[in-house]
Length: 196
Image (cartoon, rainbow, N blue to C red):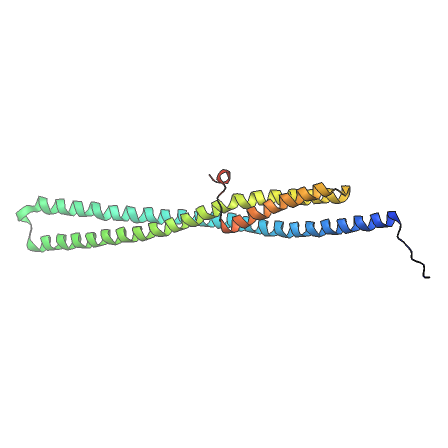
């Protein structure tokens, strides 16, 4: 009869420990991947928020320049009309014609600047919407990063202490971090304390 060699208890414990360690190490690597993706999402959200804010500010400055020019032409029209009134019937037909021609030009310019400023305001509001969208995304990424970092630390502690409860807690923190990260990309749910 063939002799069957049974493994020793210490050897079984070591293999069990190695299996747990490998599983936790692999899980920790997955946490790190999600942390990297989350950090990238957070960095992009912040960058896009700042760029959109800068573009909105530029558009509003451009808008103000158009408002000033519109007001300048409006003021010039008032002065031209007052000049016409002050000349009264004494104005030559040629002078009256030149003033009326200038008034028509100024009215056209005022209307042009009014239209241009309205178009610029629409563009500025679009950049503000983009800024606000990315501002809303950013806190989800921030909290997700923290939770994933905590999960990595806890899984490291789980390896060192061979503690399954700590490993389970790390899974919980990681899951919550991953959900917040996904929400940062999609904004499918609004968590009240994360919004201003």
